[in-house]
Amino acid sequence: MSPARRAYNKRRSSEIAVADALISLPTGVLDDILARAGLRDAVRTSALSRAWRRRWEALPSIDLLFLDDGNKGLRAVDGILLRYPGRIRRFDAYLDRDLQNLYAGRVTDWIIALYRRGLEAFNLISVDGCIDLPSAVFSRDSLTMLRLCGCAIPFLPAGFEGFPKLKNLAFLNVRFQEDGEYQLEEIIATSPSLEELTLWDVEIAGDFKEWAIQAPNLWHLSIRTPDDLGWNPGELPSLRSAEIEICDSFGDRDFGKFLTRFANITELKIYTHHPPVHTNCSQSSLSV
Image 1: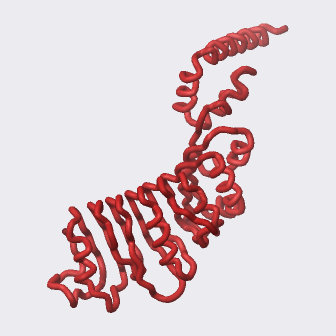
Image 2 (image 1 turned 135 degrees about the horizontal axis):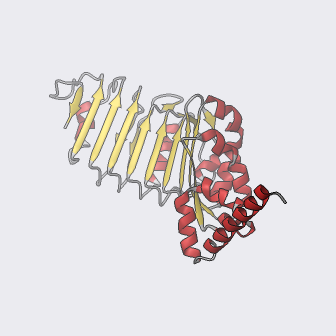
């Protein structure tokens, strides 16, 4: 055996000994180390030694976060779902046009698999297209955060019972089908823990219909849409701040009556082209 080979083997044996010494640490300590390392580095520990080969799979829970390096990360999703048996708390994915072409067809399977693993937060961002989502996206009643961007929103599944734990709901650049107003109304009304609601660039097919936003624990509301979606503030006893931007006018609706629904909040910002015929306001941009 050459001197170089002997030196390599000695160094490798030393590295394995150190790795095996680490794996003898208490389970909770190891779990904390791997969690702090991040999923990618946790998986890489499989190469340390035979004892480490499947250690990351024993973590009680993991997060799948693919916002910065989606190409490499998303390639690994199927493999992770196949190997990891534990709970997946959060899934964040950013899909540009190339990634959407590659993975849009996998989203339905991912949603079903993730929801079976106890998912709590789902954040899907598509920036160069509109991903068709399955009704299953609304089937996980333990979600605390749901954020969808660049998606075609499906009808609610049969037997939909709401999101009792949902605290943060965001629809950004999404398309609802006809009567989507009532679907939005139902989602919000059946989310009693909702604290933050964001509706940006939402499109709803069909004729204009009025509907209400009612959420007992909502404290922040942000709505930016090119058209009046027909929404009215209903019972919002906890609301503290609201930012509302509607590029089009409010049509024949009573703008003054609309404003009185926000009488008790701390901060209100409204931007609209609506001429305030029914109020004493002389500005189309109002900040309180």
